[in-house]
Length: 62
Image (cartoon, rainbow, N blue to C red; front, side, top):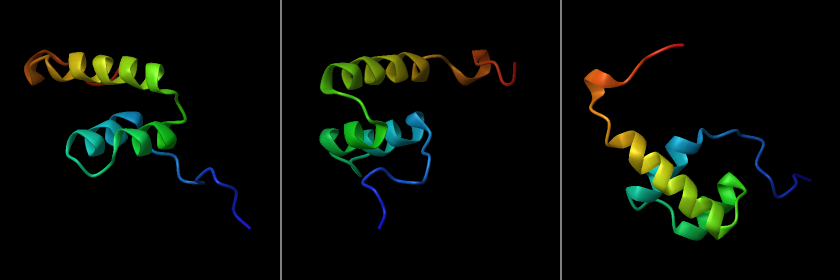
């Protein structure tokens, strides 16, 4: 029997992108990421800040 936690690791930015596109509810997004509502709001703000950086300025790699 599988436990409630998924064995598949999902990148948080992909989960948040799925939420922003309407594929997930805010509750589902939080459950997948394993965070409470306040933590999720913080993550959403962080991801929003990352998206506001123009692609030409984003560093790739280390």
